[in-house]
Image 1 (cartoon, rainbow, N blue to C red):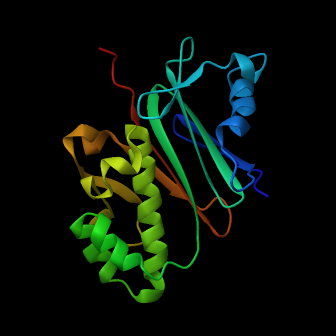
Image 2: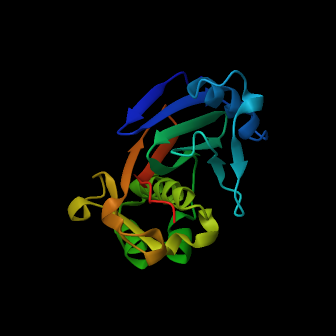
Length: 202
């Protein structure tokens, strides 16, 4: 069972056990209420926008929360002054990793995966997928926006280096303002959290 907590810059992340097949929101409301010092989760000002993205409302609209579950684990992230996304993926065999990358990823990402030895390719694929999904969750449209509309890579093309956003669709903003942290919360799982400074409200 995961029983860990992490802080990455302005973002804190907590791991919780999860029952596969159940929605994550009912489970995270209690912890979010505790973090925000609400008397109970029924008073938590949490709503979904038109695209289904969860958002904290006043008086906590300067903060952002997100969660992700896979297998029997769940991650909940909370940040202040940022817009964030978090993703968790269970490691499992993915024999079609290269085929999926060529179909859905940016061409340069697929090329880098193709250059790796087969025994390293599946792990690299999951790292990319997880990090991309974290960015797209922060953006608010999720996978529907398109995995090919952002390119991630390690410094100097190093496949073992930490991933960063190299290029993206203008709708995602300037890639240089994005921050990304990836880690292994426990053996068999890959996690990523992405965030950028919150843009002023119009």
